[in-house]
Structure formats: structure tokens, C-alpha cells
Length: 337
Image (tube, rainbow, N blue to C red; front, side, top):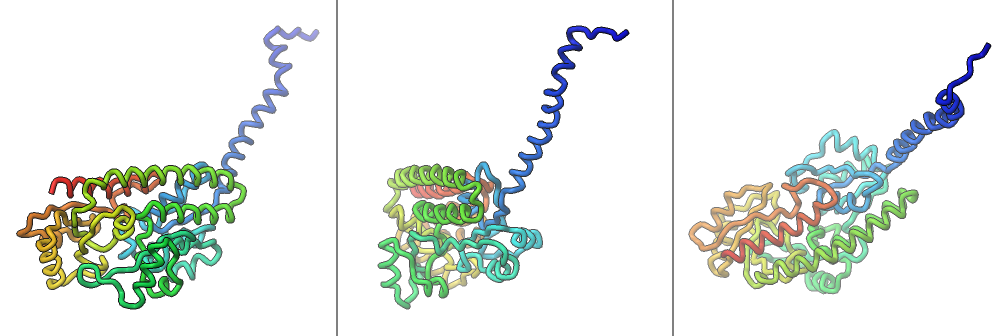
């Protein structure tokens, strides 16, 4: 004789098919989530400020890889084997261009052939300013008036400018340029990964709004010290200067790859005294001793600016931390001088 099932066992028996389906469904959902993560495109970025903009636009889809990490500088960087592998696996690669990351030019040709490569110094809508060299800030003598007129109207410099390196490549130090680059980043990601287009576009809109607010914030931060001249370690701040009307009087060195000679240091030392420059700013990646030499015997104070975010942790908020840090460092040093 069959034994009758108790009430609890009868309920369990009736629910067995549903429980079995649920048991199968849980691993399936986990697998689907894993597949969605795996489907995110492999994206590689060159430097921290660009990585930050790309990270903000990719939130919810994936995280881009970064080549120039830590306190390294694109001016002096040597490509690592892990970087080469990342370039080879990439579906999308973002960089500023050969004027800044010269170390990437040949590796991109050899390793990035299967990737969409976005050279952000070609992004529509960028303001490009002519490269300055010599003396305090002596510009190139080959057609500067033409370049300056274009920069003043927010138009791209000619492609010839790009080839000859006649424009300043620290483009991200103007939030309006960051907006232009973010737009190009979004266009590139949408084309490479249309399945996530809506996420990219929503993130890009949020980023654009944050950049507008940041621009207003920085304008207010530096307003009290706009008229005070100061010296920087190398000429990386022209876009910040142009956007906010601050007064950079000169740089210790034109290019951080080149250690300035005694004559150059003496020239800047004299300029500090003549102009009454109130601050001389070092950078965390480079020799601070030169700054001490420049301010010796003057009333100028020293500070630190970090245009390439060497001391900051990479991520979507880095760009905002970077720009606020530059504005606050200028305000603090110049206000106390």
C-alpha cells in the first residue's frame, strides 16, 4: 500500500517543476551577465585625463585600460610589454596625437591595425593654440598670426600644424576642449559598439553638464588672482591661461624632455625679479631643485601644479579633481604671495 504524502510533501511535489526551472534559471542569468561584461569592447587610452573622459562615458558598460599610469609622463614614457599586448587586443584606442605621445606613433601602426584609433587632437570644435618656445614665451615665427587668429575663433589649426608640432598639445586644460574631445569619444564608441549606444550617449550628456558646471566653478576660483604673474616649470598651461585670463609670465623650460641650461635659468630668475612674479610652480614628475634656484633671492613663493595628473588616481572623476587642483593651487599660492 502506498503511503499518503503529508501536506508539506504534497506542496513540495507540486512545486518541484517550478523549483527546477528556477534552479536552471539562476546559472543562466549569471552566465548572461558574464556574457554582457565580456561583450564590452576592449578600449585603451593613452594618458590619465583622456582615460578619465573615456571612463565617464563608458560607465555601466566597461572600464578602459590606461597606458601612462602612475606618476609617469607621456613626454618621457617607454612602452611596456603589457601596454603592447593591450594595444594588440584593443577594439578602440584613444590618444591625443603624436605631438604629445610620440612614443605611441609606431606601436599604433604595428599593433593597433585592427582597432578604431581616435586621435583626439583632430576632434571637431577644438581650440588650438600655437606652441610657444624660446625666451619667456617666444612663439614660432612661421605664420603665428594665422594660427593665433584661428585659435581666437575656436577653429582647428591646419593639418600642417599637426605635422610640424606648431600647436600646444595640452588641449584638455580647457573644459571646452574636454567637451569637444568627449563628443568625439562618444561618436567613436557608438560606432564601435552600437549595442551600448544609449548608455554612451546618456553618460556623455551627464559629462557635458558636469563640464559646464566645472568651468563656472574654476572661473570663480581664479578670479581674485587673475592679474598676478607667475612662472611655471614647463609651458603646459596655455589653454588654462587662455580660458580663464590668468597671467603666466614664462616657463623654466619649454619642453620637459630638455633640462634647461644655466643661461635659461638665469633668464627666468631675472624675469621673476623684473615682473614681480609672485609664484614659481614645480611639477611632481620633474626636478624641483630648478624651481628653488629660480626663486633664490627673490620674494616669490613656490607651488606645485600637476597638468598630467601624475599624483591622482585614474578614474571618471580624475579630470574634475585635476582641474580643481590646478585652480586651487594657483589661488592658494598667488593669494598668499
